[in-house]
Image 1 (cartoon, rainbow over the protein chains, first blue to last red):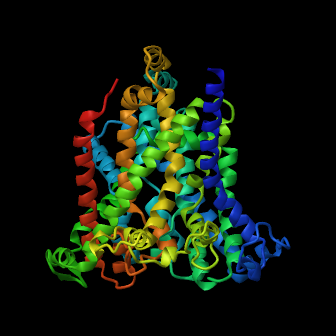
Image 2 (image 1 turned 30 degrees about the vertical axis):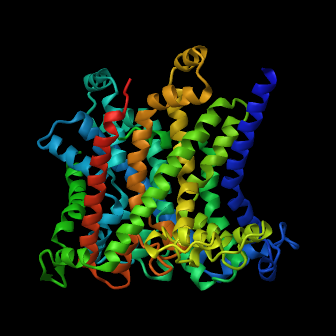
Image 3 (image 1 turned 120 degrees about the horizontal axis):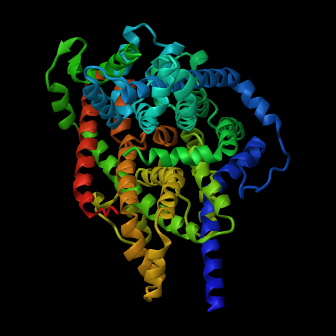
Length: 275
Length: 293
C-alpha cells in the first residue's frame, strides 16, 4: 500500500516535470541561442551550450535596430494606458455604482455589450476614426482607444457596490462630496482592484501587436512588438540577434511577473469571474 | 463626474456604431455588396475552415490538458507553487516574442524540432512552410494516399495550434486550480471511502462540481481562438498557401495589403455574428449540463 502511493507520487511528479520542461524549454533555448555565433546556430548537430558566450550579441541587436527607441515608445504608451485605465475605471465604476443619472441602466448595458466585441472586429472603424482625427502615426493614436474598457469599469463597479454605504454616509456628514470621497476614501480602499486593472492595462498595451501595426508606419513610432516582428524579416537569418531581441522584450514582463506573482494569478482568476 | 462617463461613451459607441456604416467603399454605398462578395469568395470560406480547424484543435486540447495537469498539481504538496510559476510563465510572456522563439525551434533547416525528429530516425519536416494536411503527411508515411478533402489542417496550422495551447495552458491550469480549491474535500473523500477509484472520483465528483469552471473556460477560449492573430502573424503571416489564414488574418490582410476596408469590415461583422452565435449556442448546449451548487 505504501509503495503504491509512493509510485503514484513519482508518476505525478514525472508527468508534471515533463510539462514544466515543455513550458520552460523555449526560454532556455532562446537564451542559449542568443549567446551563440551565427555559424554555430547553423551547425548540425546543434550545440547545447554556446562555445563562446557572446554577450556582445545583445549590444549588436541594439545596434542593428533602434530598440532603445522601441522600448521608450512601449513603456511610454503602456504607462499612459495604465494611468488612463486606472482613472477612467475608478471614475466610471464609481458613477455606475453610486450615482443616479438618467440612462444609467442602458449605458451600463451598452458598456457590457462592448465586452463581447473583440478588438479584431473594430480595428478598421477605429483606424478610420483615428485617421479622420489626423492622429495617424502619433502617440495619442496608440493610447486613446485603450484608455477605457468595459471589463475594468465592471470590476471597479463591483468593488464599489460591495463597499458599505455607511462609509459614504459618514463622509458626507463630515461635508465630503463625491469627488473627495472617491479620491480620498474609495480609491485607496479599492487598491487591490485597481492593481489588477493596472496590471492588465500595462501588459495588454505592452504585448499588443495588431493596433500599433495598423496605426503606425514610421520606424520612430514602432513599439517593441512591432519592432521585433520587423526585425524578424529584416534580420531573418541572424538568429542569435533575433533571440537576443526576444529575450530583452520578454525580460520586463517576466520581471514584473516574479515581483508581483500573487497579483498576477489573482488577476487571471479575477478575469475568470467576469462571465 | 457624470461628464466623464458621457465623454467616454462616444469613444466606445463610435467604434461600435461605425461598424454598420462600412458598407461604403470609397464613399460609395454598396449596400450588402461586401457581404455578398465575402460569401461568394473562396478565400473567405478557406478562412472559415481554418478558423474552425483552429477552434477544434485548440479549445478541447487545452481544456483537457489543463484539467489533467491541474488535478495532478492539486495532489502535489511540495513544489506546487514552483510548478505553477513555470506553467504560468508562457502566458505572461509576449505572444510576439514567444512565437518568434517557437518559429526558431520549428525552423525547417536548423530548428530543434527537426533535430529531435532526425535523432529519433524520423524524417525532417518543413513545419511552418508545409501546406499539406497533417493526415496527408501521416498517410504518406503509412503508405496510404488520402483524398485532399481528408487532408486535415496543414502541418503549419498544427504548429500554430500547438503554440496556442502552449501559450494559454498556464491560464487554464490556474483557473482550474482556483476551482479545485473551492470544492469541499469531504465530497471526494466520501466517494473514496465508498470505494471509488481516483478516476471515478474525478469523473463523477470533481468534474461535475467543476462544470461551471469548464463552461466558463470553454466560452472564453472559443472567443479567444476566434480572435487569434499575433502568433499567426509572427509564425506564418497566413501562409503557406493561405492554410493558416483564419478570419482575423483574412480581415487584416484585406485591410492592410489590399486596403479593402469595406470588405474587411463586412467580414469583421460576420466574425462577430459567429462569435455571438457560437457563445449563445454553447450557453444553451453546455449551460444545461452545468451543475451549480
